[in-house]
Length: 217
Ligand SMILES: *Cc1c(COP(=O)(O)O)cnc(C)c1O
Image 1 (cartoon, rainbow, N blue to C red):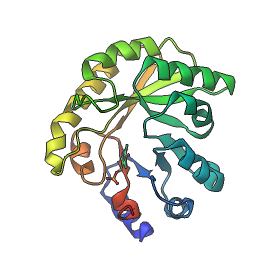
Image 2: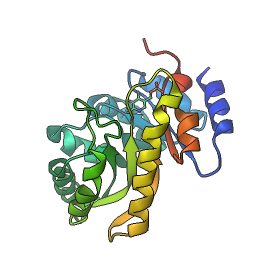
Image 3: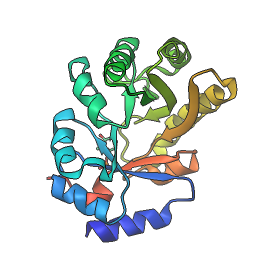
């Protein structure tokens, strides 16, 4: 089933768009099945789950952190992940920089944008993205490669469109500014119900769980 789902999704993705399998609650065996069928990027929400899957799968995939990252988990996270998509504070960026330096790594990160400006959600407010990016560029062991957003939960994917548009505008603006140490190559938006809208609005990394692995139990 995972194999067929993957083939179907890959067929729908335009050239230059990458698929990330959102693996929360899946067993390492399920994740491995997707990788053997051709999935290249795994998105993990929890460091502990990622560690378990990484023990089984290792470098057969690239690992992205897509959940909220606590500072006391950063030391473990920088060993496993190739990219951290959820950086939203200077404190977190500083810890990632420090722990990456300690293991001789430069970590690729995305800035998570709270595009819906929801008070209880993680991510940085749109108006605070640029100042945060400028501060983070002072770190030597962190490379900013783009933006990520969830958007408010919406039953109708059309309701997500304005939040994807807003994030794309920020992405384009940062790209145009061409700041030193900022690459702007990755725009991570869209999940199972919303990735088609996200693609129309310029996403080039989509994070898909349910449609790839089936309903979560
Ligand atoms: C779970 C999750 C997804 C995928 O959600 P689905 O609706 O199952 O496709 C994408 N991004 C993040 C950050 C998630 O936590």
